[in-house]
View 1 (cartoon, rainbow, N blue to C red):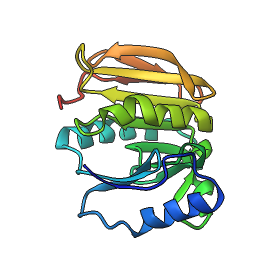
View 2: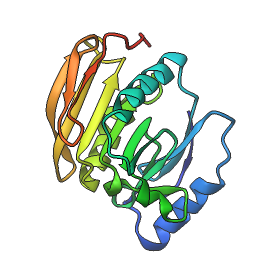
View 3: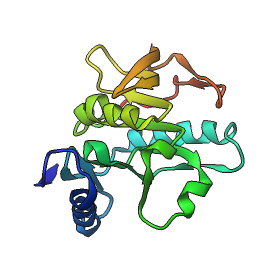
Length: 196
């Protein structure tokens, strides 16, 4: 992963605009993901095939239960200016109406569910930095598929954000079922998630 450094403090006003402008002008190689993490524009390598397979399996199951006016997005940026962050989650479930605004991202607060799937290059971001940003923004549910967890692959659902902290709703080993509460009311079978 390469990084271009900018201010590390929470971005607001002109600082945020400058950071977003730098992000928009960063042209990573095809297939890479360009994000702003703690005030640093980062470029991550494309995810592995297993990573994409897991994202698709989750998306396919979510499609059956979301309201007609919601969408599931794989390359949608979500902004958390108070944490100097603009993340590109693996999946974002949000009302389609929020995409009617011009631009290349939405406020993280508009998301109903965010899904991150760890890769070797992003485990710290997906376990610590991003959940703190999503919680602070008030994203109701955060699903972390962690193929690189120390005790073996896990799937954890976080909710009830307070400040920059989530409560763990459910944590299971990959292979077990995990339930997503309302408004989804969906039980995900993770038995067919491929190993990373």
